[in-house]
Length: 406
Image 1 (cartoon, rainbow, N blue to C red):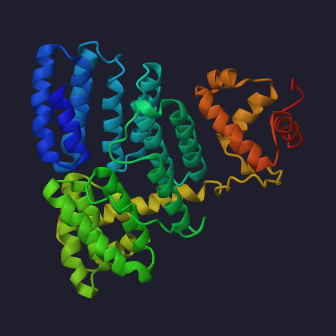
Image 2 (cartoon, rainbow, N blue to C red):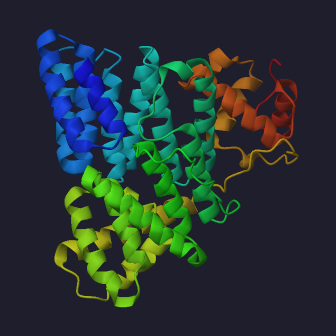
Image 3 (cartoon, rainbow, N blue to C red):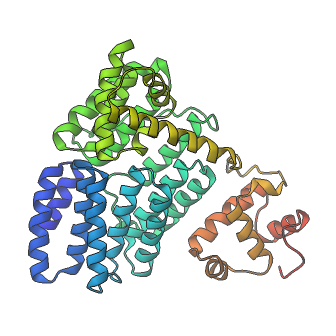
């Protein structure tokens, strides 16, 4: 157990090599001792290390092998199995395989919830919110973060997010909304004065600040300083994802033709490791540089990855063109148009109109009562009503449901 928790501490500090050494030692010891919980969690964290040090393919192979091992030995029903699902979801998310990531995060949420493994449910919910944000389904991302907040009210002491937090994920969503012109520009507060100790949580914080600074030319000096800081800290720690993001940002910020040699090297490394989503999250500045690079003589692997990234940008644009615009959650409300509600909100409201309770709606729609509560909170705000009775009346005016119990 000491070896396992030492590995976790090294992971918190972003020290991938030290973490891997302790994980391997703890896995050998815990296998011999029959400590299945620590074996499953150790295998999951090993996958998290491998995606940073060796890339997507190696991490996916290791995690899929661990899942097959759990299935073969009939230990896949244990709550700790949710850790493997979550970490494999993260690997697919980094590769921008959002459908696979969504499925795995959803399984982690359900598996962790059914087994009382609160940390897995917490991290899975935030993973789903990241997927929704990447899909530009911003209302759904907000609902998931609200559900996470409700969950934390009763399980704060039993959850631990290694490299993020609810506050950071709310910042991420606000940043995407601002970049899309769907919300105010995000002004991130300065890091606290005690942020001198490097952690993966601080790394995520600085990566979000870098993304924000890249969006405005007036902030590019700040972006250069952030990119340099992140690369200097992430490279010796073998934090591959942060290193690639920092180097990609440095290429965006470079002057003229100096950008392309750096871009070429960065794209080759990103291609070899399968990193896609972290580069896409840098937004239009990265896209513009990638488009410019196609007119130059890049090495084959770099050119292929540049084209792949640009294709993914196009897929995102096409998908978002068919989504309803996000609706701000506000108590002011007042509109009565049905199309301001998401599909899931309409389903929840229809169930409510037919006499459903939180628990019965949750069973019917295969979601948690906390999620029902969150959806109804948004429904009430969007419709400008104060509670169930007014919401049911408004829904019937809009033709969502016929007469039924109230």
